[in-house]
Image 1 (cartoon, helix red, strand yellow):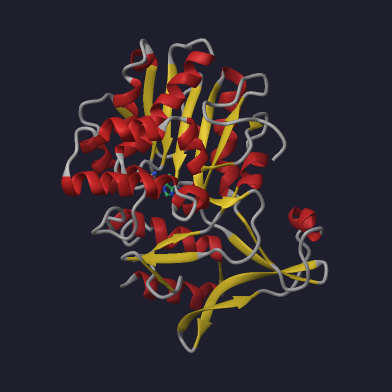
Image 2 (tube, rainbow, N blue to C red):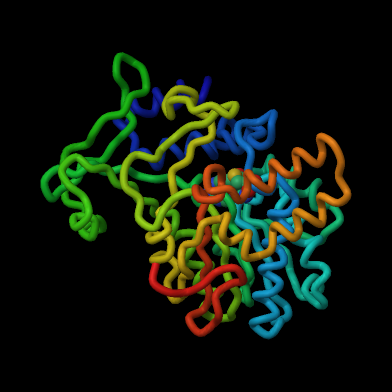
Length: 356
Ligand code: SAH
């Protein structure tokens, strides 16, 4: 039975599904989910992420984390973790670059948080020269200082959507219309967790929430607050999101989110305010555009150094990659960076603390 038929049968039996349940099933169903069965990344896949565009991305992040580690007195041992590492490319580039910082590699215990067994195998191959362990939940990260990176991870976590009616909210659900998956709305009801959104929304406005932010962020924040370290979260989104950002991408093209369950990547924009709130006990940096962050870390100097060894098409694609990562009209502004540290620590390299 296809995933679509499985979902239809489930809705026939139990009634309309919440959007977060739909998203979790489509992405992580053990045998028919997107991350468990498809090869999402790269030109052949459905989308291209920053570490797959250029080695510079992972290198600079590795060096930023190493600098932050030095700033905090080079704690040893510490956990170097990544949430949702995809093909493992970012971690591979980060380890290579940060390996030049004395003591960093020996002190780092690398732990990858990955829900998809298929992607674990790809990460194992990419990182075969490194000593790496895997966990499926952030809760299982060791109790010690933690330096953590999450690139395009939080956008994959399941969201719920609510449409305002008076001072109440109607939840958007996935149901059936003429036997086909279709959006519907639950009856209006109070949502105390959304009281704070009554101030910046009006009748008919849509807001998104994600309870998994707290599930993942709370254990991360507890470790950083207690033992030190930092988290770097990079994703598309804003300080407070509004409107429908739920989308599906298949073969680099947008498709309807209910059209091809399990075959398209489903995402929503990240609400960084909600993420910072979920990081209890930590201090959030100013939300910073990716282009600004990478420039501060020296991407242009690194790009020039690499360009010296390249000719012809390789040089052209290297120049295009630099532009793609940093230019405001490409990923430079759409993607944002949030840093989290213990309240007394300096912000991670490339970021500032202050009013958001
Ligand atoms: N960071 C990578 C890949 C981003 S795609 C890159 O930049 O290329 C999202 C990643 O998160 C995938 O590896 C996916 O399998 C993983 N993932 C999605 N939901 C998850 C969850 N709930 N827990 C752990 N990993 C998850």
